[in-house]
Length: 133
Image (cartoon, rainbow, N blue to C red):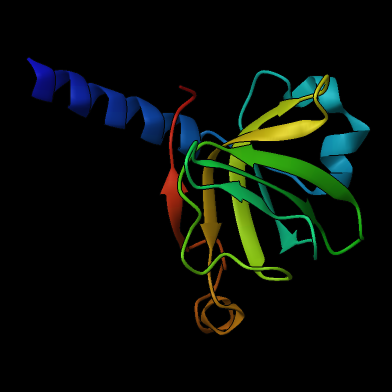
C-alpha cells in the first residue's frame, strides 16, 4: 500500500514538473498573477552573495537572474545541489508567489557550465526535486 502511494506521488510530481511553462525572469515579473497557480521553468544564474542555506532546517534561498539582468528570489526545501554555486547556471521549476515575490521551487538543478555546452538544450542537470511540505 505504501509503495503504491509512493509511486503515485512520483507520477504526480513528474507530471507537474513536465507541465511547467518555460519563462524568463522578465516574463515572470511582467505577469506575476498569470504564474500564481501553475509551475514555471526558469533558467538563469545564481546571483553573487544571495545564497543562504540552513542545513539543519534544509532551506535554500537565493536570487537568480536571467540574461537580461532581471532577478527573482527562490526558496527550496530540499538539500542544496552539489554543483550549486554563485554565478553558476541554475534551472528552477516551481510556483511563483507574488506576495512573497519569490519562486517556491519544486526542483532546483545546477550543473557545471561546460556540461550545459556539451548537451543541447541545457535543461538537464543534477539537483533536487520535491513537493511542498
